[in-house]
Length: 363
Image (cartoon, rainbow, N blue to C red; front, side, top):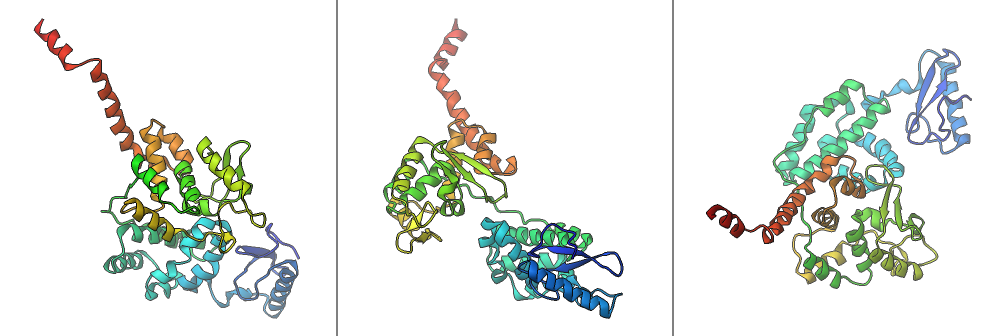
């Protein structure tokens, strides 16, 4: 058996074999006509099945029974795209797996070859009519576009179909929210956090990490010697290093001393002895007790970035700390820098006052 690709396990990708009769590559899908191949033995079995089919009909590939473009969006998304996301985009997986339950049935049942500009714009319209926000509609569209990019890379659709999908634009008209806590609100929130919640919130405020990154943080990614948190699986897929300041190090050292030895997770639920799946209820309770309204956990990330900018940190550094792939994503905080520059300039009034100017004119 000659594998032309490097992956011998047939998981999530397509493998190419040499067709011994025609001397041309034959493509086989892990989720295709025959069986799932979990290891070398099953791969060999699959290969043997293909050869058997080719002996019966050497002019026809056994995978031509059902063209890939005949898959419905639901089938492709569930059996191919989500399986790929599960191991490669841990952050996205938890968000993307719910998409099928939140879009209408008629769209899920469409074949990949039937989805174009009209269908996606109809989907946007229906979602808006159902009360979904513009931001939510754009988020769904972004996920669908990403899945079609993979569909093209895996030869489920031609390039023309992908170009058509990419023509659909995000909806406009809704300003992105930027809610952050004042210094007084930060103190009030921390004072009302339950013991298990306090270090989680404290970590968010001092690092700007996403909730999924914090709850999934392991001690193997915390370097207390060099004061660094090393994030391997991030939203944009790139490795990120976050410095640990003195205040956070004190909190992490306390957790490290009392850590459980049967798990590598930093934040462990004492009731289940496992990592937290979510802390939404306790966080909302803390906000309510602190008198903080209209505030989500993700806004702690905005709080981190906003206070950095207001204290003179340049946007490029903030971009790197947040893990933004594009500077344009960080520019939402630029106005905070301008406001504080204006306040800084006002301090010169104490030295160069209007009275001095008036005296100069009247001399």
